[in-house]
Structures are given as structure tokens and as C-alpha cells.
Length: 296
Image 1 (tube, rainbow, N blue to C red):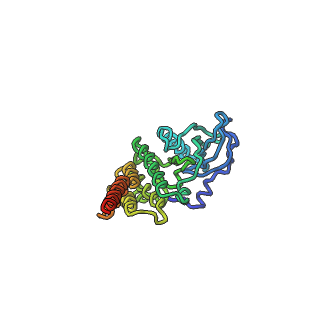
Image 2 (image 1 turned 120 degrees about the vertical axis):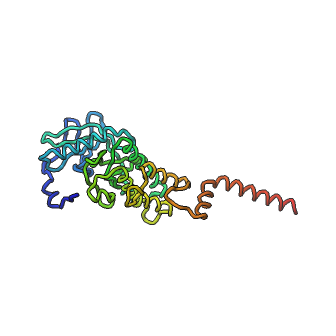
Image 3 (image 1 turned 45 degrees about the horizontal axis):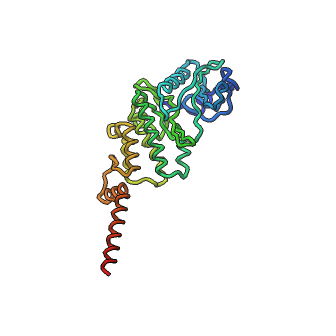
């Protein structure tokens, strides 16, 4: 895999401004981010009176390769109808030939920014489990993301979690090769396209960040290690299995990746059965109190 240096990136960058009104419908407001091979703008859908996000190619594309990749990303998203995956509303081209597509605007913060807040560990883990669910859905449709990072996930104002930037997604070895350092599985770093277990590795790297600083129990550390195993065969077989283990931790149930000590097993049982334990303890205290009173 080849990385583009700054000079090459500057040489590729277009100088054409984005029209203030696209297709006489989408009024551009401001740039809000970058994803894959394009820039993302906040826009007003004047026909339906709603806010949308518009992704536009913003680099030279003499061969048409970038346009085809952007259209491919839009097609992938169009067939992944899931509440955890951003939906596509429209697609088209600017007068200068640059391709764009329109998607739902998610009002919130990236998972990276969410991780930097003082959100409780349980809230972080539930958000992560929702990401795993969305990725598992994509895998069930034969689509692998290949570039999962905390900045490719949005957490909405009401806790909704949406996975973005499917520009490297595909279902076979002919998919685009790339990714983000620190989240790429070893096989991707070696120049291979990767598969569903490559996404599992990236999810493990995301979970590791959500657990910082120092809020991870031994069981969660074991989950991260299994997800990020060097050998894909030693990782979780699916994103759903990874998400399930995290939910089991939240429910104080056994986590498959961790070997528990007798003390940990007892503590976990007490947490899961705290209502029963409290009732039994109250009953014992009452009986002792009654016995002491009668014995006087």
C-alpha cells in the first residue's frame, strides 16, 4: 500500500469552489468534515426543508476512478438500510463533472469526541455495541467497511450511533486497499484487502480507546486482546460476537474471552443476583432480630 505525501495531496487538490446551490435543490452551508476521497458539506434540502450532508469529490480525477469510487460508496450505503448506517438520499454530478451524493445529516459528535467526554463506561460500551450491530448487519449483506475508526462513527444527541465513510467498503479481494493507521488489521497493513475479521480488529482498536484512561476491567482487556489478535483466526468470528461479549459484561454475565478466578465468579454472581441476595440478607437480619427479641 502506498501513502500519499503532502506534496502529492496538494497537487491533487482541486481549486474549483463548490456551487452555493446544487441541482437547484441543495443549498451549501459550510464544510463539516472530510471522508475518504471527498469533502462533506452541511446543506439545506430546499425541496423538503431539512438539513442534509453532501459528499463531493475534491481532488483531480482525470481517469474517473474517484468518481466511480464515490458512486460505489453511495451504492453500498443505498443497500444497507439499517438505523446504525447513514442512509443515502440522492446522487449526481456538478457542472464540472465532480460526483456527489446526499445523505442524512447526523447532528452530534464523533465517537472520538464522545470518548473524550466524561461519559460513564456503561454508556461508552452501549454505544460500542450499537456500532458492532451496524457492522454485523453490513457483514450479513456481504459488505466489509475496512476503515472503521472513532472518527467514522457519529453519536447523536439522543444516543443514536451511526457508522459513516464506507469509501473502502466491498465484499471481495477486489475492494479498495487502505485504512487508517492504528486501526488497520495486520493483513491490511501488508497490502491485502482484508475481510470481516479485519473490521473486528478495527472494532477492538476502537474499544481500546473507549476504555481509556484506565477504566477497563480484566474481562474487557481480554475482549480487546481477542478482537485485536494478530492471527485473524484467533479473533472473534463476527462483529456480532464481539458486541455480544461487551453486552454480557454490562449484564455481569460471563465474557467468553476471559478466564475468571473463583473470586471474580463469586463477585459477578452477587452483582447479577443482588436483588435476591438483598432479600435473603434482609430475611436473615429479621429472623435474628426476632430471635433476639423473643429470647429476652
